[in-house]
Length: 490
Image: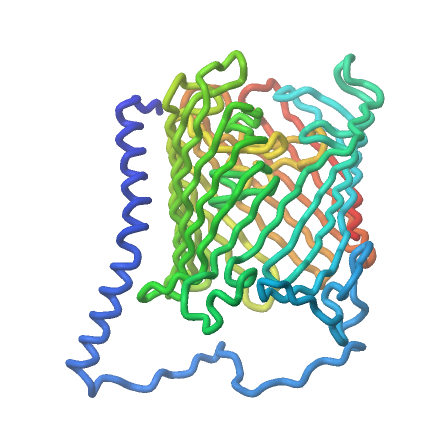
């Protein structure tokens, strides 16, 4: 089904109205509900009865602490200086700054190493067999509970360029390839005004719990649908907004000026990103309402993809035994329409539940996309915005093993149904079927089956096995992918 430009603009205007309505009406609706409840209780005092205690309620009686012998040994980071991470015992004497802030500096260095042997063979993409690996190292200088400085490096890969050996593939790619280097993936500092300058408000009377984060940092909003990228940016967040009828509300402003990859996973070095993000926790649901504006020049040949606006609103709640999340997303390209900034709308639904007597999870997720929806910013390895739908729509984020099915959500209807089984604390097995139907005559449809098995080998080693079989609309036969991965956490 092809939607006209005028219809898309009307739908996107509706999404913007919903987002604005969530900002404005959320607190008002909660206040009206509270006032109506109070009025009803005042008019019918005889109807007020003590609440019946739920069988699932937590006990009021405290339980004794478990001895360390019952918990087991602590998995500490690779290197730690100062107070041990999640350790026990006496803390080191803190430092008191002239501002009155109390710091207890601790340095923790940790990371992960992933090595995989993987193959893909179907005509929807280039067939290959490769061995690939990546190393992610992070140094966290923890100054207090709210202040820290973080540095992350990726010595074996740079964005989507991985160190690997291709046994079989395109003639110009076979053989070894090194992407080693001192690649800085993360470098930021975060702090909170009230903790950095406690003398300003010693009685804690004013709303000064305002947090800042400045530097190259991982940014995700709308569960990675709108933003999934590492950008040079500054974020300012106000937590613990006390609005009537809500347990918590939060508002965040974000400005990014570099390392911005647009909706096609390509960096736009002229782009500037401005975002306003809000969250509301109500009694029965949690609501996120976000708006992003990306400013850039209109020169597609130079990889400058023009201005665009992106919006999203979501509601997450539990209905009976089901966890549910409903999300409405929209984008509007304000200059020349292209793969990085275009016009479109996506409706996404995520559901999951567990069954009595078994620790397993059943999930069913799906989306409907009209037009050419694009995210505001997606890293080069992030793939499309519908990756959260399931195994068939997500990539391994390692080498050339991409998503089996189209995960862009553009003029498409997609679904994934799966069952995840847990065997104790060490083994997990997932089966999934799914498909995507192309509604725009772009030959991007397909369906398939995927599975993944994970097993904890020791305190630091995890084995991951996976594979899929798919039938893509733009290929002439059945394709498959297989991979084995060893993951080391330290």
